Image (cartoon, rainbow, N blue to C red; front, top):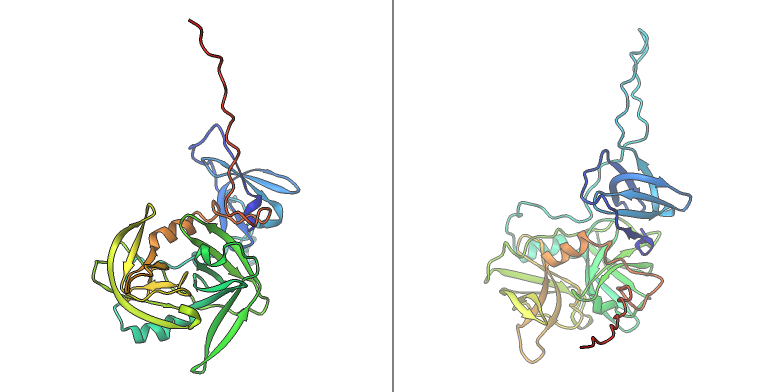
Length: 328
């Protein structure tokens, strides 16, 4: 969905429950649930309870009405009954990312690398490279904002496993979906026509980990693709620049940026993004809880094609009103 065309309109009856719920299916397999207020040739207005979303018509796949259909009359004797629905119901599908509520069993790094290594990729731009990982089979992936900052030509290198061998493929049709400069996160999507279904990794919980537990990272430090480094979680609350990071002894170097930090269940618990260059074993990762918040609110961080040099846009502040000085 081109979320740059999505505008928020404040409504007076904010917080009121919806009388009925319609489902608006979008092109990127997302959906918005609310009450359709108006349908125009170029947009649709949807009341989601606390605000109204204006959705461009060219991003809407279909609208599933929430009205309850009247029961069909009984068919004549001998005639098979046919279910009648005002509109085809949406097909149930997986979420945008996988986040199991129950932790998977603990396994060795060797077992996990063979299973999830294919989901970790290289992200290349004309000025450098970093790492990333797929969130779902549709080609949505995460990397760091600083890996693609100021770039529009982005390619993703994936190592597909076929018959026990690695097949390296480069995908060059990569679109920027959402950016959060302050959290150093970027959501991308591979849109090559010949792209297959991609192997993805689940998101875990950094809050559930204890300091001292073993973790490992996969990435491309200094361009050395598919490099695995193991260590422990040193602390979960390292403050850097006003934000909290996971600190780990797993080696993190330039090129690891945007890659996943895993627990021993094979779940992503952080996004590696920096290290202390003057020391060893001082790597940092963005907690997965921050990543989940970014993904759950990706519409708010949508990349604007109209302003590609800036991942965020603010309205102009109101001008200060100068009052005449008071006289005694």
